[in-house]
Image 1: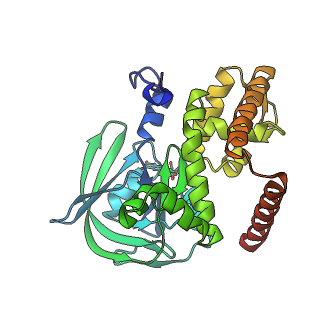
Image 2: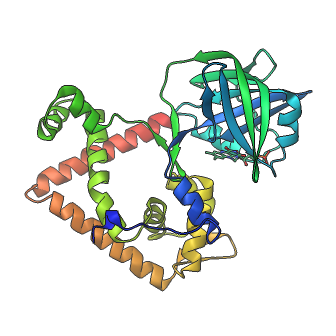
Image 3: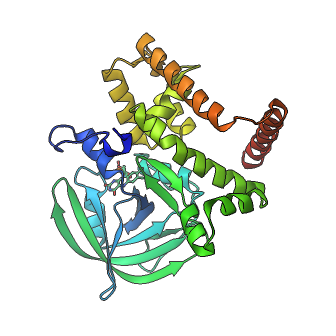
Length: 323
Ligand SMILES: Cc1cc2nc3c(=O)[nH]c(=O)nc-3n(C[C@H](O)[C@H](O)[C@H](O)COP(=O)(O)O)c2cc1C
């Protein structure tokens, strides 16, 4: 059967809460940090449940876990500011998702009309008064009335399938705009900048590999975790950073793989592949190698070596420039 037609997971939320969260995670969102001033204290929390609610009156909403230590303060503050994060603010997002006592640290910000911190570098600010609080199971829905809004240049940070992502022009949308056939687009791209070619190729290869990954019954998080653990054991924190995974997605996936006997966790908190896990990781590598070999047919050894050399060089130089 076509692997795309077979659900990876299905069932009732009551049976498996983690699977339910993964299904919810199929929906892509932006990432915000909601801030407020509460007396002499500043609140800040990473939130992706933010949504626009109404244009007239101008209302927005977000939901907060009932168990959050900041709930009471957000309710009594009577206002909040939504900071829409930019693509280069992953570290900031992680910081405001932590339970650190001082989440702001050296983060630069300016006080808004109600004193709520407006974070510098965000691509949008919405300053709100608290309009209504609605019960929502284990969360509360905070509805805000927007008093002031501002928009800045930049690309948004996205969150989907448990991990951060960035926007990228959809190749089909580009084709629709240009009215061109796929081959013509690929041809055009190969004459553009290297960055454009890399984006385009990476997108195409990921799409092409999707069916293979699903045929192996692997989520993106599982796929990356097998890859990183093949050569070396890592802690959950390392894996989140190396594999660009969101905290909860990585934790859930690691727990699931341990339950399946694919991984073990040692006393130092490092995850190791079990013999069964190693066998699986090797099967995955063979699958990826076969996928690449087919794509690389008729590409000469010399061309391949030159491609690897140039890509390696670019990776090294850009790593140095962002360090
Ligand atoms: C991408 C992302 C989105 C999040 N969205 C929400 C959300 O919508 N509501 C919520 O209550 N917590 C959300 N969280 C978790 C909170 O940020 C986190 O629990 C909180 O900052 C912990 O601080 P506290 O201990 O002060 O509550 C999210 C975390 C991440 C990484």
